[in-house]
Image 1: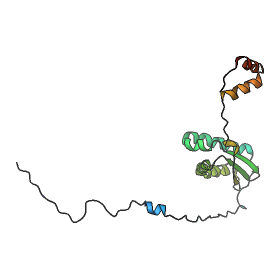
Image 2 (image 1 turned 30 degrees about the vertical axis):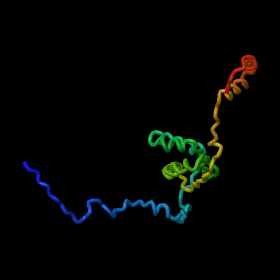
Image 3 (image 1 turned 180 degrees about the vertical axis):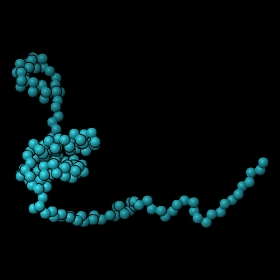
Length: 170
């Protein structure tokens, strides 16, 4: 049995040249910041229902939304579970958020939540005010020494025991 070798001549290169992936590093590095245009939407509220709602209504619906989020999307749930919604006026709700990244996750569900809430309470003139809440980000590190100091406040005899035994709480 003889093996025949044949030479194949092609006019086109076998590799694909000239096909762009859609992402260019040069265009990314040279990209100029585009101006963001802010659009304002005018909604006439004179014909919309404006029923009264209470703080309890707001908190019940928010807790219901958190329970649904916990099972549906745990990532968004963990981001927005520290948000505080407070009724500030007859048709105003203040949303206190801990960080900008958490607010970005909240924006994904905010439309769904507020549309549901407005329909539920029959008040479509609710205005939402977002405010950064710096106090909710503070996390206290609890050390053994701090725990022992709290116990000393409750039972002063522990201070005498500490003086006698010289506990190392570092």
